[in-house]
Length: 259
Length: 308
Image (cartoon, rainbow over all chains, first blue to last red):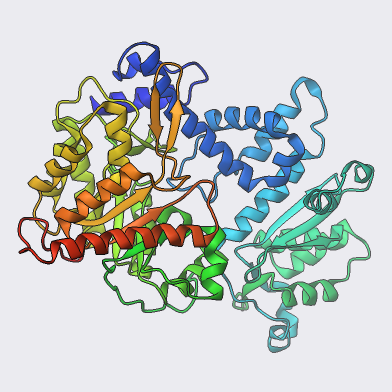
């Protein structure tokens, strides 16, 4: 009985239709329906607020009415699956992109801005980690370096966009008009929380590929090859030292030499 | 990965004073100084992340204040049972922080794996009683400690309910050995919404449970919603505590004796001094009740209380 009641109640709360108290045995008539609607408004309203806090600039640029309509649809399609909300909203950038692409339209920059905001949320709550510093390279046998594998910091997120998404983020955060930026070239960047603050750093195409390949668990040699392919002038030594010093990696493994 | 080298917090009991809820907008006030409050309460769910500055700040503050972990999302009333992952995450945080009190709600939030982020109402039946008691026992056994459960604010009542809410609350404590978190604002909200006698509600609970069952009292403000056909009170924790709720606090304290009191303020959160002033008001009421009770012999179930 309780299981059925809770299933019906949950269905009512996540439905776009007016709640019917009678269907959940919570009284009859418009008074009871209005009371049941308090719960529906709490659920949709509180989750829309949680999402607005996770995507503050996407929210701001969409405007309150558009945001609320999108958020309500998103909540109904993707209610939280965990009993806390620190990382609720991972599917929102793709949901937004799908909605904005309807009818074959160009979805514009908003989904990519949302992806950057989401990466910042994940980085903020990610596990902590102590960096492996560049000095470690000198301690390793130099002929084995191509086999070196690096463990990314738990907060590392890598983003590439056909929009100047980091510049858009900066401008929107400063309350500036983002439209003058929209003609500029796309950007690749990393998001990282080395200690307390979430940072973004712009990457060249080679650097992006290099870090993406390493973060996927491939060796330094493989990452270097991929990076040179993406960017002929890629500076391997400089990129490795810069990102080790920047706290991007928290561990390494060097497989035993095969005899 | 660990947040930092494991700090061995010692479980200290929550004092019989007024505390406040720790909210993100006040964290810097606590990191920069030591505002004078008896203790602090967090919403457990706000700290279930893997790491980061929020947990670091909490550990810094925990080292200096007695702490209570108040859960809002475990869904003790779910017929489908508790999510093992939800228990594991909470246990890890609670083991780490060693809070003086751990509490949750007599409500449900999760159905079919979807978490609805609200404290949803339960029909008060023998079946529900069996479900919630089973879940409470499971959580208490996982934690290896007693929890407190809080009476809800509700806006609807179910046709199938057969047990008055006050009796339902008392019965949970009697069957599971858990303590109660008496939220007198919720008594006021629910009482108004369903036409219950709030003083009698409190007396009914306290007449039935042994001394030491009520480990904490909540006070908060509520929102008065003018619906088309009636006025309904909504538990939004977004305004000062009302006079009616202060009176219920006084009534509860006159039966219980000194008890930890928590001022909740979760929406439209004011500057810290406003919250601290509400807590001071709660302490003055507790002192007034205590001085009135002192001359006569303490007696009855409420005269003694033990740490929760």
